Amino acid sequence: MNSMEHIQTLLHENGIKQHYVNCPDLNIKDHETAYYGESYQRLQKLKTQLDPDSRFNYYQNIKLV
Image (cartoon, rainbow, N blue to C red; front, side, top):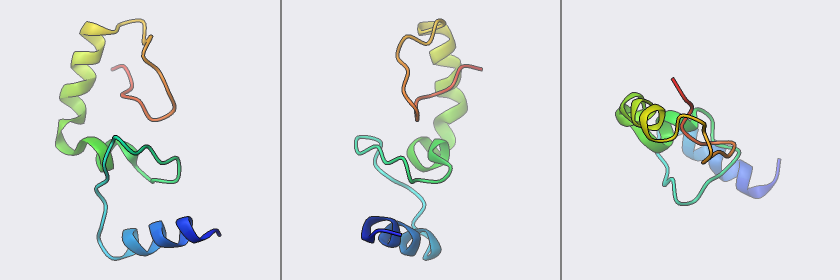
């Protein structure tokens, strides 16, 4: 485990479960909740309307419904 992973583990174990989406981090568990919180389902619906072909796509993006 590198030092960044260690810090992330400590944060998660101590209740820090929200993160800034502008700093994507592939090690974050449950990125949907960490980045978007309660808004994720609403954002999924918007993505389905606005980007039905999922052209804006990367590992931690909003998934289509």
